[in-house]
Length: 125
Image (tube, rainbow, N blue to C red; front, side):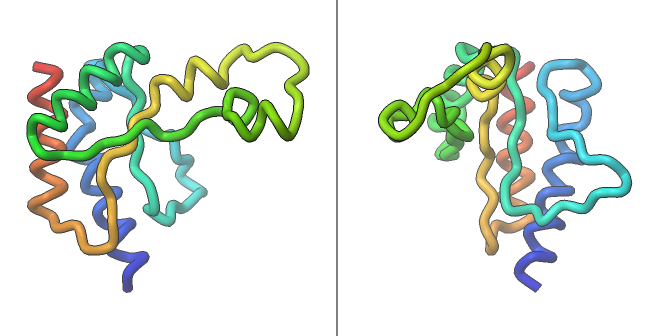
């Protein structure tokens, strides 16, 4: 039942933010029709790192904590100590700098998801 709530809220975010996808202001995760989601994390992609930082700051003024998604392993302190990177970083660093996780937890309410989505839309107005 907890996972069902995650999936329901994930789909709610996707529906609420669809207009921003259509207008090419953000990108959402691409999920093929044959795949399913577990809803544990909802992320968007902004145009670039600067826009992501501005959106994080704006959301903070609305009492919403949104976080960058991850640091690529080869850029992390652990990755630099424990491994080595070979080849060309064509996509990873750029794409990770655009990712932003929106709040999603097992007891987030429909109203809270609506509020976060409305704030994201307000930022892009």
